[in-house]
Image 1: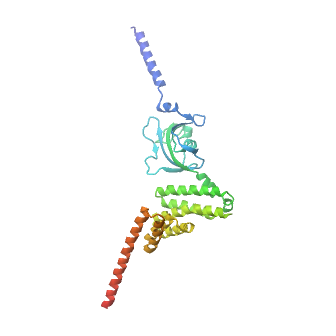
Image 2: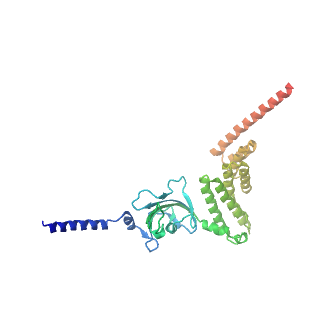
Image 3: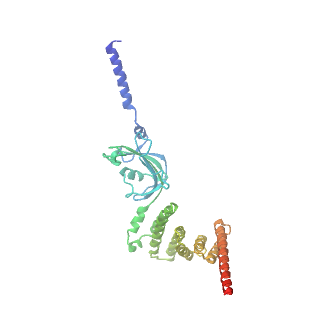
Length: 328
C-alpha cells in the first residue's frame, strides 16, 4: 500500500470514529426520546414513571413532596430531600424557586412519580449557580408527589373579612376547614405540635365566626368542630398542657356527651392532673361504650394503680401526723 493509500485509510478510520462520537447520544439525549414536551417549546420535558390519581395539583397548593436534582453524567444529586426524616411540605408560589419545577408540578397528580428535564431558561439560567450548577446547565429532576392540599383556597377564604366569609357557601367553609385539619394532621404526624395546634385553632375560629341560618347549618358546624376539639385535646397532651387538653375534651363532650375519644382524652388529662377519681369516671364511661378497647382498659388500670398509691401515701401521711400529735 502506498503512503497516500495508508493516509487515506487512516483518514477514513478517523472520520468514522468522529461520526460515531457525534451520533452517540448522551444520557439526557436517551431520556429526551421517551419524554413529552410540556409547553411545546422544548424547555420542559416530562416522563411519567409512576402514574398518580385524581385531579392535577392546583395553583398555590401546598405539596408533600420528595425530589432530587441531577446534572448530566452525575450519579449523585446536587440536591435531594430523600434523606430527610419527613418529606417536604412546599407551597407553590412561595417555596418552589425553580420556574420549570413549579410548572412541572402543576401537571402532576397525587402519588405520581415523574422525571423532568429543564432547559437553562426554566432552571438556573445562563449563569448557573456556582459551584454546584455550571453555566447554561440542563438539569434533571425526579419528583414524587405524596399528597397535596389546596391551600390556595384557604388563603383566599382567610383574606376575606368576616362579613364576606359569611356570604360564602357553608360547603366552601367546610372544605377550607378540612384542609386546615389535614395541615394540622401533617404537622402532628411530624411531631410539630405547635404548628398543628395553630392549624386546628384557626379552623375552630373560622367555624366559630360563621353565622348560621338554620338548625341544620348549626349541626353541620358542630360536626366539623368535634374532630378539631379532639385533635386539639390530644395535641395539648403532647405539649404537656393537661388543663388545656381537658378544656378541649370538655368542649367535645358538650357536642357529643357519649363520645368515646372525648371521654378518653379527658381521662388522660385528669390522670396528668392527678385527679384520679375524675379520670376513673371518664374512663369507666368510655369503657361502657367500648368494653374491649385495650387503650381504655390499660389506662383505667394505670389510673387505679396511681389512685391506690396516692391513697396509700395520704394514709401514711395522716398516720405520721396522728403519731406526732399523740407524742405531744
